[in-house]
Image (cartoon, rainbow, N blue to C red; front, side, top):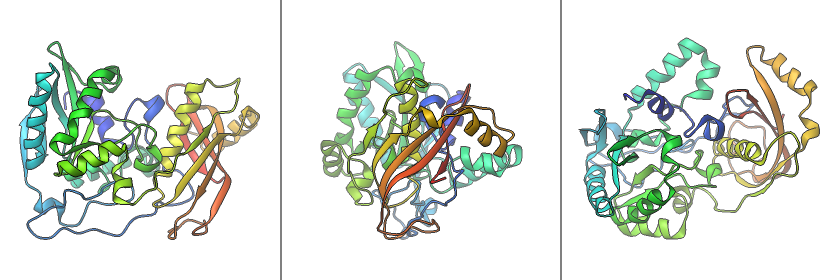
Amino acid sequence: MKNSKRFVALLMAGVMSTAVFAGCSAQNNTEPVEATTQSVKSGSIDYMALVNKTHALPDNWEKQLKTVHIKNSVGDDVEVEKKAYDAYLKLKADLKKDKIEVDLDSARRSVAEQQRIMDDFTKKYGADYAAKTVAKPGYSEHHTGLALDLYLIINGKDVTENEDMIKYTKIWATIHKKLANYGFILRYLEGSEHITGYGYEPWHIRYIDDVKTAKEITDKGITFEEYLGTASGKKVTIDYGSSKLYKKDDLESAVIQIKCKFAFYDGFELSAIRYAGDNYATDKKLNEIKKADPKSKYTDIAKFLMDFRTSKNTGDTKLKPDTDYKDYECWLARTKDDGWEVLDFGG
């Protein structure tokens, strides 16, 4: 895309601005628990297929996918699944009645393209950095062709940057009310980062080809994962405590990173996150972390505690299945210019 900043952001593991919604770190002592492989029957795709951080794109999906290519208002080529595009056009026409104009920023991105990005980052910056920065090929909902990222056109001007679009809360609220009428759902809900693995994205919609189901999901205010029964909707209690080192916005940003990271663990149920306190953010600990990673330029660290229950399948982790864990440690660090990064769970 011509808007290279936004295009790169879409390829990354994270979503919005670096300070709040940067990609979740993969630098931990465990590997994500992956779900059973899905498959697609010849000549069809499943519009209710779940693709996220723990559920890969079904086998043969790309062979069965039927797409169209369009040019958006800034001249970029966008590839979309055909039925999703037809529904989008109806949504767009409806929004225009309310004097709201939208266009497609991005939709389908092939697994091969994502792999090329991963290989390029690995070559330039190393495997560890690539793993922390680029979404794992095969695990992006954009592979389906059913995930659409919108952008706004305000008074004839294209508004494509995340930090600019997020300001138009009333416009997005109107858009969201109409989504289900055309078989779309809002994919990444605010506060559900521990389920979806992504921060709130008002522009990221998902086509499921069923108006009744879309309305049910929307009316209940739940995520796609919750509707499909792969995640619990249990409320997560957040305790920011008191801090003289960090503002509440800083701690909120850190919590979002923790929740995004937690989404890698399929079937785990998060119940609470607590800031451990300023007394853990010592120069001694910061120096230990910087010594372990000499290339890092961390300026701040923070410790949080989590309560959660594991699933029956804990994969390659060292955690016990069907077990409640309390006060499980999580360390984060950030640099002067970048947002928080989860360094370790349980260290």
